[in-house]
Length: 470
Image (cartoon, rainbow, N blue to C red; front, side, top):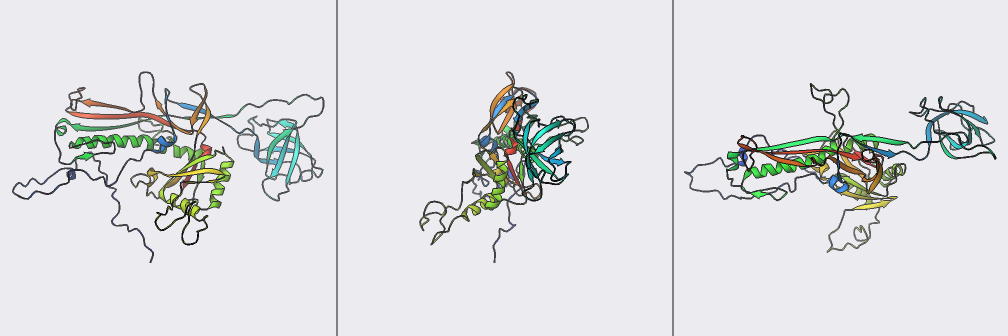
C-alpha cells in the first residue's frame, strides 16, 4: 500500500502577530496557594527556523537610487526585419506579385521596413516544405503596406494566392551604374517604464509595557534577544517589513483603468509592475505542470534561442520542481551495476548518496536553487489557483539607454530603483516617535517605530525570462 503524508496534524498557519495582546504570551496562573512551581524553559524554541522569505532580489539584482516618480528605459528591438502575416495577390506560378504586409502595427503606419532593391525570402506558413520563393523588391507602397516583387525562380510563385506567408530580408541587388538605396531605416527602440510604490509599516508599544519584564527570553532571526516582550514584536515587525520590500516587488501589479484601486472613492492608486506581472506580459510562460523531460526542456531551449540567447540562467523553483529536475537528470544515468551511480563518483556503502543536482548544461547552462518564497505555506506555498512553480532568470547584466541619466548604462536584468536625493533617502527609512523608549517627539505615552520604503523593480529584457505556472 502506497504511503502518503497525512493531512492531520498539519503545519500551523495561525499567525502569531495580532493587533492585541495574546493570552498565550503571558502567565495567567497566579495561584500562590499552590506550593509546586512549574519547570519552565525560558528560551523560545525556534520551531520554524528562519521564517523570513526575502533573498531572491539580493541574489540576482542590485539596488540603485532614482529621483523621479517615473523610471523609463529603452530596450533594443530586433536587428533584422521579418513579417509573419503576408499574402500575395498573384496566383501560383506568377513571375511577379504584389505582397500585402498584414502584420499588427504595420497597416497604415508607414513603418514598413522594406525598400526597393532588397532581396527577400517568402515562405508559406502551412503546407509543403517546398512552398517558398526568393524575390527582389521592385516597388514599395508604404501607405498601403504593399510591395511589388519579381521572383528569381523560373517556375514563379510556389504558393497559392492569399496563402498566409512569412518573409524576411536577406540582402539586396542593384544594376551597374544605378543610384544607391532609397530611404533609410531608424533604430527601433522599445520604451518601458515603471513607477515606484510607497511601502509602510509601524509598531507601537505603550511606555508602561516597555517597563514590564517577561519570563520568556525572546530571540529573532537578526539576533535580538532579551526578556522584554516588545523587543520581539518590534524586531518581527522589522523583519516582516523587509520581506514585504521584496515580495511587493515580485507581486505588484499596475491598477487597471476602471478598477477599484484606480478609481476609488477620493483615492486613486497606480500600483507597479512586479516581476511576475512583467514576465507574464512580456516574457515566456510555461504552463500545465513542470517540465520534467529533456524533450520539454528542449522546447524551452528553442524559445530561448529565439530570444536573447543568454548562456547562463538560474531557475528559482519550489521543492517539487526541484525534485522533477533531479529525477529527469537521474534518468539520464546508466544506473551502474550494484547501485545508483549519479555523477562522476562511485557510491559505496559508506558514502551518503547524493540524489540532487545543482544544474546541467544542454545548449545553455542551467543552475537551480530552491526559492523559499514559493515553498512557504504562509506565502506562495500551497496555493491552488495562481500557483507558480519557478522562474528562470538570466544571469549577468545588460546595456540599456537610461532615459533619466541620458546615457547607456549597464544594469542587472533585475534590479530595484529606490527614491533618493541629496536630502532624502527612501531606500529603507525607520524613525521613532512618542515619548517612551528614548523618543521625545510628542506627548503620546508610547513608542511608535515607523518603517517606509519607496521603490520599484526594473525587469530588463523580460523576453529572456521564463515563468513556470501550474
